[in-house]
Length: 264
Ligand SMILES: Nc1ncnc2c1ncn2[C@@H]1O[C@H](COP(=O)(O)OP(=O)(O)OP(=O)(O)O)[C@@H](O)[C@H]1O
Ligand SMILES: [Mg+2]
Image (cartoon, rainbow, N blue to C red; front, side, top):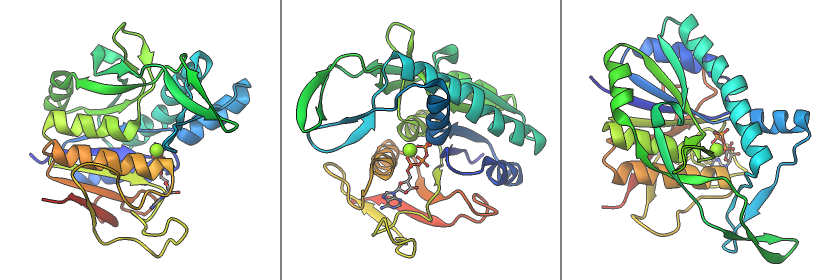
């Protein structure tokens, strides 16, 4: 039966999405992010949110140990329970997991990296983030076969078994590839991929990406990573990838957004 991997952005209300998962009636794996939940909890806990800026100009979260703690708490304690509860309320047998559970997402830690602080390049060594290299897909298949809907989020498990921050979009792509999913739907708080990030009316009806190298239309970090994730999924054999509006009444059964393709 058709398998859909859905990535829920932290800024969208998950309830209409969860109701629509129930309406779909086909097997789904839900992966979620939680940037706003992390930002709120960091403020409550007095942990500074910092950004790494690569010399190429790409921004990413600076995950020192205090931020890793905040991220884990925000994902498992704030973002995930809302999704799991909404799915269960809609009659979906949802089970909340992180990449640590059963070693579902295995990641390799990024090495010391250059970052730009106040115009100066410095080396960062205490960033606990990584890249997903392996998905324990048998566990997900067993859960799906038993009628459960896995709800999965960062952190992933590093080589030493400890938590590592990973990008949720790329984690969703890795899950979709590992499961041979028919479809990956990246639901976010935008109408789709915009040709001009400042103009909500500039939604692309389709977005074609080169097979390698820089991706177009990437005004800020979040969408840049989504396009990278979409390309990884397509090159990994996922049938269809959409970057779609997660704020509509029926975000899955009446999808509104941008189908992504890679050039032949
Ligand atoms: N070209 C673009 N088209 C559409 N959105 C864009 C574009 N460039 C930048 N964006 C921004 O990217 C955001 C989506 O990425 P973001 O990482 O903020 O959210 P998310 O991935 O859905 O949530 P989370 O990071 O919590 O998982 C949009 O809300 C929009 O503000
Ligand atoms: Mg994001």
